[in-house]
Image (cartoon, rainbow, N blue to C red):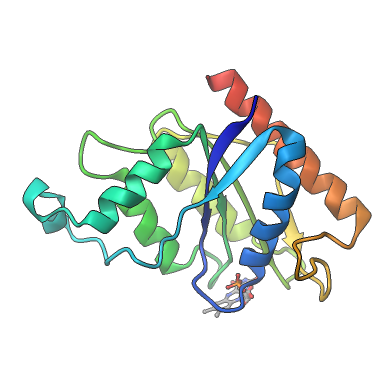
Length: 185
Ligand code: FNR
């Protein structure tokens, strides 16, 4: 049986290395019994507390939360900007956490991964992200950690990982996430 996972890519850049990593994960996911469903964040307005009022709550926010809530798990693929997460991703997280009493993270199995050209990749950003998610009650996958240093050609235009050890690692990461989802079900 397949579990569905809401997939958020924390970059609106075009092209995006993290979009590329997400494409590779989408290709590998079925072997781990997962189906990744893209949840775009680029249509979300900047969150403001006045938008929480039911009469002012924008449809974009509702649709976004529904997509996260309907899935069995949440996977966030994050870039690192200035040693933290990009603002566009933080905005989406703030949307998911609200309105008060309707926190989409509570009890949700959640995994974090990301890539950058740097030697320590997105380690610092992921550390921030995991702290945010834990504070919102998400069940965050702690092991394995997945800091993918991007080298040119690592993932081709069809989402195929060209390096065998990286491909195996990403598959193991997805299998571990599937186990977390099963254990929280
Ligand atoms: C970066 N980049 C970057 N890389 C990193 O490893 N640590 C960092 O702190 C930063 N900071 C940073 C800030 C800003 C404003 C930009 C635009 C870039 C480089 C970054 O990893 C690279 O641009 C990736 O391609 C970003 O991921 P996407 O958007 O391609 O998925």
